[in-house]
Length: 396
Ligand SMILES: [Zn+2]
Image (cartoon, rainbow, N blue to C red; front, side):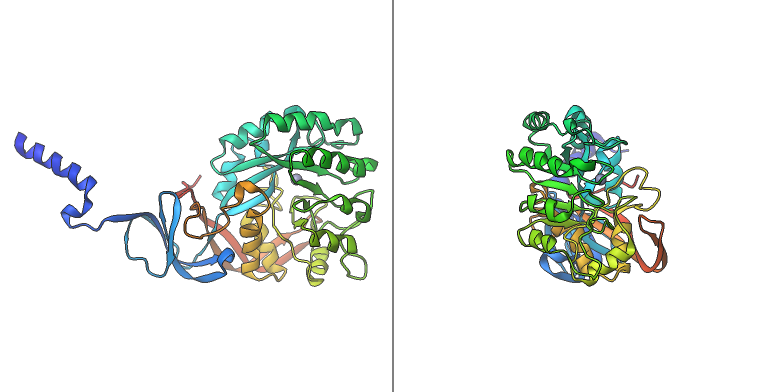
């Protein structure tokens, strides 16, 4: 039994050890977390090498080989890839409670809900985005009733400029842009006018427009001149009518012109109408690479077709894109699309410590496009661990 004096002195020692860990000869805990021994691929710094990544106070503190200082926690990343946290710029994660958390477990540390709702119900996705663990913003659908089975803006009155402007003015922090879905089954003959109205709304707040292309009534030669620098074209691999490439394998001049003036081109994997392998083959062969990947994530896509962001990325490994470019499309490139991500998508010391630990497995993996065509790839990325703001995310 300890007597009272011993107890008091032990308690005092305990407090001293907490404050001055060297008193007992233990090494000082210098870092909160070290991700050890992984293959670090950080396209923002053109780095591809085995490194340790050390984290302190929620930020990347050091990226170096064999960091020997003590850390409160270690993630063993041997035989794994360590990349900046993934940024998914086209999801519908804010349509469902718990959506952002599910994406986080897949390595997604930043995301955009792209037009699930318009002015009438914008409060719903905003509430979910606000409670998301990772940075999450929404694009407002120019159709005031949001996504409708019979077409968001088939009735042109729903493309309500005043309503969208009022919604943005009320939620300036959370609305990162305007979404215009332009396919014939969404906007019909109204596509051009819907895009004009989306631009009228967006430009008064200096925000980008994201268009959903593919199977539009109007040709791209009419639609694309309305796009400004910083706007995003999603579903870039959508098959005809009105794809970005002609029958002889040339990228359309209006597409080249749009890229030249700073319009971004995004995958938007989704489930139907957006991705067909032969289109991806010819567009990549023409040298027109995506700027960003995105999943167009929904709870339904999670079980078939999309699965998770690493699976979507793996499709482009199969299609022949080099690994570092695949990572770039999901990290540093995506970080440039929206200001909320501007200091992310990188493992640069000082940046917020958002990290995806991925496993690159070799084997035989089936991938499906949006037209039930299967292809077999030899590699597949799997989520292994996620770090958000310097803290390891508990596995769900
Ligand atoms: Zn979508």
